[in-house]
Amino acid sequence: MAAIRGAAAHLAPGRLIQKSAGRALLGELETVLARRAEASSRFVALFGAGPAAADPPLTERRAHTTLHSMLKRLVVGLIKGFMIGLVLALILMKGLGLATFGGLLAYLIASIAGMLTGLIAGKPIWAKEAKIEAGLKAAVGAGIAAAALFALRKWIPFELDLGGVGAGTGQIGSLPAVSLPLITSFLGMVFEVDNTREPLATDATTPIAPERKRVQGDGDAELPEDAELEAEHESSRARRTR
Picture 1: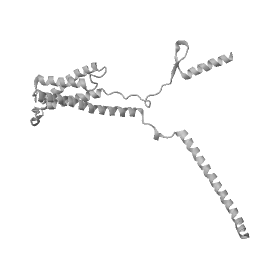
Picture 2: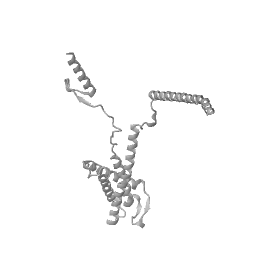
Picture 3: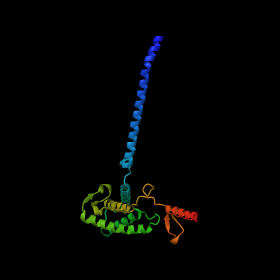
């Protein structure tokens, strides 16, 4: 028993030394961490948090939105114009038996195709407050379609044989199944891109202007809210001095 007590008395100072050393080490570690945290906060205060979380510039977001809208409308205009030209060509070939056309009749049909494209593509005539705009597009479309048919017949005199599908044989400008969809597809894309709107303003893109209120005075001028508070403070101070 005496031997055990002696061994315990011999080990006690060693345990005390270990505990004191551990506490000292923990204290030094806490001091180092506190210094590092203080240095980090000073760095952030001086140089900021860095551009990692910064949003892209407003001009880039608007450009990306506008480009996406234009590409979408190009595809929509291409589909609309192609369908208009295809339907007219089918009416001529299947309904009237005209697999080919020429002379003034060809220009008249092309003008009708351009007029219909102007009434439907872009902002259609049945949209709200779109009748005047649709009428202008129809007139412009008729002229462009006639000029485009003239260009096809004069400068692109390629021969096509579409007799196997009942679409006739001849130059591109004399085949309704080819010339009309080409012309109306081009006009449809032009009118749809012309109808591209600016991206709507959102809370993230619209700058917030300071609130302005009217205060009684000469001219009833508009002043910011801070100026109104300052005026009230001055009036209350004058009352106290009285």
